[in-house]
Amino acid sequence: MNFTKVHSLGNDFVVLDENNIPVISEKEAFVRQICKRHTGVGGDGLLFIATREKSKDNFDLRIFNADGTEPAMSGSGLRCASAFLYHKKKISSKRIILNTTLGSRECEIIDQKNNWFQIKIEMGTPEFTSQEIPFDDGSFHDKVVDYPLSISKKAFPITLVSLGNPHCVMFFDRFPARIELQQLAYEIEFHPFFPKKTNIEFTRVLNEKEIEVLFWERGVGETLSSGSGSCAAAVASILKDLTEHTVSVKTSMGTTTVEWNEEKVHQTGSAQIVFDGKYLTP
Image 1 (cartoon, rainbow, N blue to C red):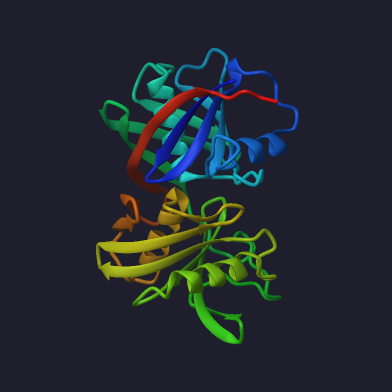
Image 2 (cartoon, rainbow, N blue to C red; image 1 turned 90 degrees about the vertical axis):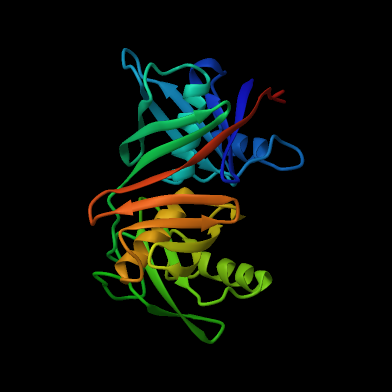
């Protein structure tokens, strides 16, 4: 089975062209197997891409986390899928429509150097109500901003954003130690107030145009970057009037740019083809 390994600032995916592989009946189990770091190809997730009949530059995209769960959206996944399609010469222009479970998303390749791509993606319109997140503490919230979430008898202010998947954004003047962040992230991901679990973004505002973010993805754990997580952290920063409406998001592997003018969110960042390979299925 042919595959391609692609990453966006360290958020890495195995990419499969469903038109050219055998039918996989149990996708969740297959994803868990191939995404294992030591016994599989390794990846934070897997992307299934399928060509739509008689549709140029229009593709179906399904996104899976490494644990086999299927999130509705992934910004890094959109960029990696776009890079894969251009790398494989499956598109006739630099504008691509990717059809996800949330609807179509337009992606544009704005620069390329060999196997490296700079890509602008549409991330949709953020949602904020407690029902849309979802977040359930027994009450309805029009917006959840600086909500005091109790973890280990200590209250942490959280701000929530949905971009098709739930995000819990936490702001710090100085990041706690890594082991403390990991424990905190794990407890928040599985907190009973989040019925579908949540992603967590540990965020530090550097100035009105720039933030720094550390990521924890539900179903994956700690990741080097996250496209939707970067967007959520930027939107939360804008919502709290901490930054301007165009924000540079610094991750451990590089920077993306997020734009939000109270309608659709757009993000510009990189994706890189790592290698093509053949997976020898059992």
